[in-house]
Each structure stands twice: as C-alpha cells, then as structure tokens.
Image 1 (cartoon, rainbow, N blue to C red):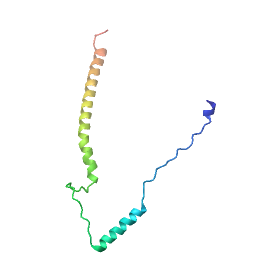
Image 2 (tube, helix red, strand yellow):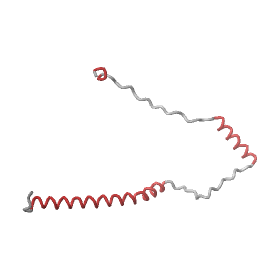
Image 3 (cartoon, rainbow, N blue to C red):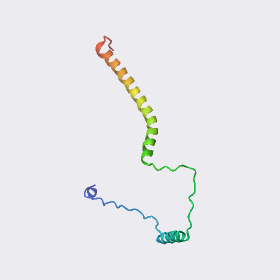
Image 4 (cartoon, one colour):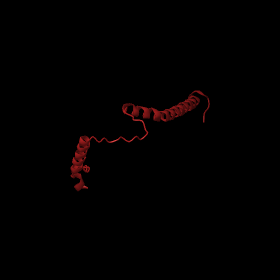
Length: 103
C-alpha cells in the first residue's frame, strides 16, 4: 500500500506503425507514365456503371436526414410516454392531497 502511494506512472508512448512504402514502385510507375505519354498511349477509364458523386458535402447531411426519421419517431414515442407518466402522477398527487380518500 505504501509502495503504491509514491508510485508515479510512466508516460504512455504513442506508437503508430508505419505503412508500407515502396519508393521503387513509385519510380517505376512514374517512368511507365512518362513512356506511355511519349508513345501517345492512353489508358482507358473503366466504366463501373455507377454515376460519379462529386458532392461529398451534401452526402453526410442526406444520410443524417435519413437516419433522423427513425430517431424522430423514437423521440416522439418517448415524449408521449413521458406526458402520460406525468399525467398519471399528477392525478395520483391530486387524489392524495385534495380528496378525502385516505389509506
């Protein structure tokens, strides 16, 4: 107990393992790109069939709007339960304080 009283914990170290980085691959890709550019070869872009969505800004708002419908229903039912509980408790309080009813 006394030994733990004066114990000062060591600092926690922050260690992030580095991602794999291959400088040789980058050099090969750059040389390949330059060679294709000199020869006039163009890479064709594959069509995935999905439309391109460039507007990232509105996507989060749209997703939150969709999930908020279920949250709104849950909030509404919770508020309804709370109002009913308050009404029941107020009726019980009224009966206890203002009626001649006694236990």
